[in-house]
Length: 359
Ligand code: HEM
Image (cartoon, rainbow, N blue to C red; front, side, top):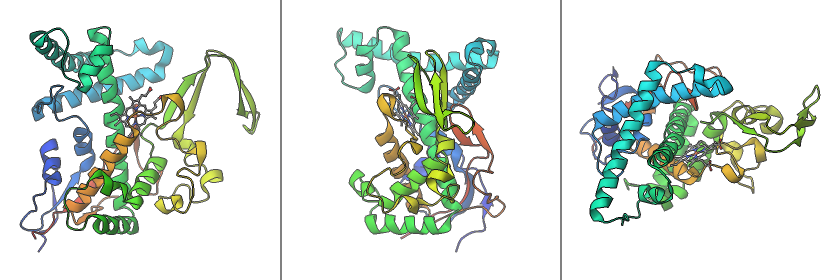
């Protein structure tokens, strides 16, 4: 029998997820409520250092906190644009220094190792490949941080929004559970091929990325004077001149909720809207959570696989994942959102979980 729901923060972050992620089934049902957003933002950090060794959880957590502060500061600076240097409080500077120190340590260790082994690093690891292209220590550090910045919070946000939507839409959750069961049966570790067979899961994530794109705003500076076909005139339908050097800001969030493109239910979470189209993206440039063109996201496939795998493992490990009783089920768009460089749910994603019954 299930114990009565108790409030519990799933304590240590990575351990908690590994507990969820492991194949271990508990001997009886355990119900708990947790803010899984916090877990996701830690899970999406690499658990191993640049040499492939496990990093202590406390170290990862301190790094994650500093990374968050630094990123929050960068978002403020981003909005100040040419006056960004006015924002530089000690807390922000300290966090940036700590983030740099964390990465510097690994680069130095790698340098020492490669000196021991000879001049050229023998490994073909990601960091060694980057090091061969980077002209300085600072450039290598920037490249590594760039990948982390691009890949961590974006994926964590996508996971949080997806779970938030799932626990608020029972029929979608049910259909997804059925699909996972039909593809995996009793198997506990989904392979890439099995995940690729889960077509409804792909639509669920697609619809979540439509409503809550982790990168909701973006901009580009014109390298030459040009005319965009729309955006001018009182109704915004006339062509518009963009001079060289001018900034064009565009929003995936706004585009993906346009009723003239997605229909009257554009604000609703309905993965089925993507079904029955010949083309994977029938909405063209009204759907671009990974951007497009030459600077499109390089981690798209990886991110989609990471999100899919995590959702599958969560649903497998917990036969009941639902909205806690005292949690609001607000209309989409009226929930509190937090915008830094990414769009996250300001109140996290609280869920009530029931651990699987022992087989
Ligand atoms: C759901 C998760 C993700 C979303 C929604 C996302 C979205 C985006 C977007 C919108 C851009 C374009 C930014 C710009 O040009 O201004 C971008 C760029 C990039 N992303 Fe992702 N991303 C995700 C996950 C990842 C992951 C996991 C990685 C790597 C492990 C990654 C690596 C990159 C890189 C390297 C770029 C820069 C590409 C370039 O400038 O040429 N992303 N991403």
